Length: 407
Ligand code: ADP
Ligand code: ASP
Ligand code: MG
Picture 1 (cartoon, helix red, strand yellow):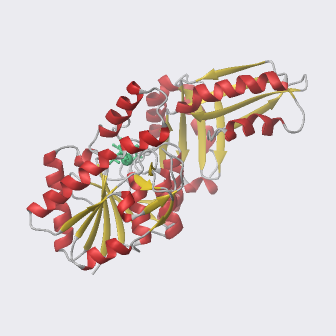
Picture 2: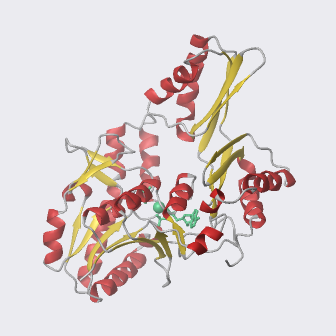
Picture 3: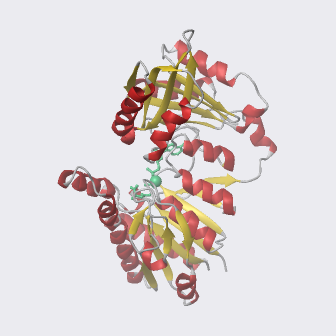
């Protein structure tokens, strides 16, 4: 008997009708002789609705209470799905994150899973029950409710699959797999049968929200067999592969990701001496703000300009910190831009092929799109551009790299 973890996202459980359809799908997998653990998200739009209410009542959004609030979305869907499963004759039982005991650290809104106690779930599985677990949530070691960051139900599912040593983890969503670019932006985007773990990690970290980055990290760490599928239609989906087969090596670029959730900050004319990078970024890190791209330029007058990007939600905070640091360091000033987007081309084939960055820059130049920042890794080239050009850039690059063509 196989143990399967299936995760259904917001759109997949977005209405009573959809929840019934999920119950049917889960029932089918169960009838095939599998033990089933199902992770669900809140109904689509619900997490945003709850966050909007929190903001309206207290713009400061006290972190602990915000997590108590937003975790309720998933509590609704676990109960409804269990009821639907029971109606069609199954034994089913819902668990909140705390009831499983998915233990996380205490960072509200972006908690990391530390451990999972699988003992209760295992006992119930052995009794033939279908287990339905609330995604996105856990508890810290004091029992406070925490949430795992937007899109966190993916991570709940993969972490549970790892803890239970599941035979497969299936992420059911509103697209039928991982595409060469966001199919909402590029109609010609192509579903990949397989994507390497490394590429998926990079695509997710560069903004392809089909899988939350932490879920991919977990999958890699515990080698969880992971597949992305549609909850609306049958199909093979996309397998996340841990082996690079030769055919995949030939595809230089796997896909393009975009991220319009960042902002850029620059501190100019900083007197250049050892320790300034630490002085600038240390003060940002102290406030738990993640820095992504970093560029430092030395000018002829021995001062330096220092530019970096942060999540857009942290922009105002980072700007305030930087203004203070600027005075302390005797810098010329601070500028910022929160209308940027990062576009990345990703592929393991870049290791053995040259010219990727050049084709990327040439394509953007042809479209008249100015590049504000560049960063590269072994399997990725990212550029920061004006966010109004996001769709144009992604479409043009998709075409230039011929990603719509069958490999
Ligand atoms: P769920 O609610 O099921 O978790 P999400 O909205 O979080 O669904 O993720 C699915 C969405 O991810 C798709 O609707 C699609 O617009 C977007 N997406 C972005 N990049 C990609 C990609 N490369 N392949 C597939 N989907 C992508
Ligand atoms: N409901 C949460 C969100 O909207 C978690 C998830 O859907 O994965 O971010
Ligand atoms: Mg998601």
